[in-house]
Length: 199
Image (cartoon, rainbow, N blue to C red; front, side, top):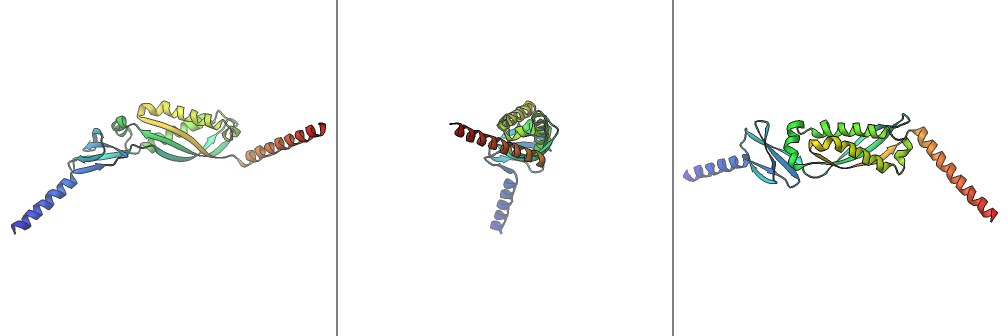
């Protein structure tokens, strides 16, 4: 009977200790809350002591996050170009407590994406649709990143890169660009033939 009571006490103690422990993984930044309000952070990876019902631990990725967004980008001539864009960003560990206080765990939907959409529309409206398919693309990516950083840096985020992955031009414009390229190729070929004949 004594052994049974001892076993029960040990089980109760171990379940309490497990309930009072939260684990933060290597690729996470943790923040401890007390009654729903941010109390301390950032917390280091590993086990953290919490009092059930009083404390909880919020976790944010410490790695670079790749968020893909599909959107319509306006151009200087008034067209809308369909684009698929990757935003590579991360939360600064020393500012995670502030991020969660101001924006909560939905910071990506409430802060990152709206800032990106605004910056992308503003930058793309300065360029012609054909520029999105040319060497100007890297300049557009850099301009969007710079405009995002001007807003997000103070909020505790680092934008590593903005990548225009796929661009779909309106059908009429795509056809006219193809026809122009074909005409240029035919002209180049004719010039080569004439030069050869002349020689």
